[in-house]
Length: 73
Image (cartoon, rainbow, N blue to C red; front, side, top):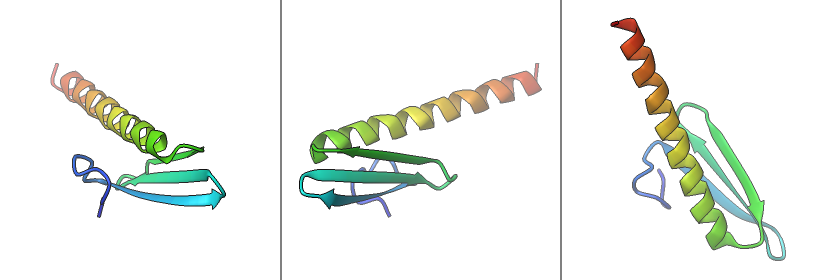
């Protein structure tokens, strides 16, 4: 279950501190997509991974809508 972002229900996220002040967040989608970010600002990493995950979902929806429209043309 995704405890970080309620609007990204097909994602799970794990954040860890690799060393003092260096954080890593990994997002994994139910389809197997993966985002892996590392940095020194955990809040900024959270914002960035949310944007990236939403972008990936948007691009996936666009790709499938194009495939559907091509199949019925």
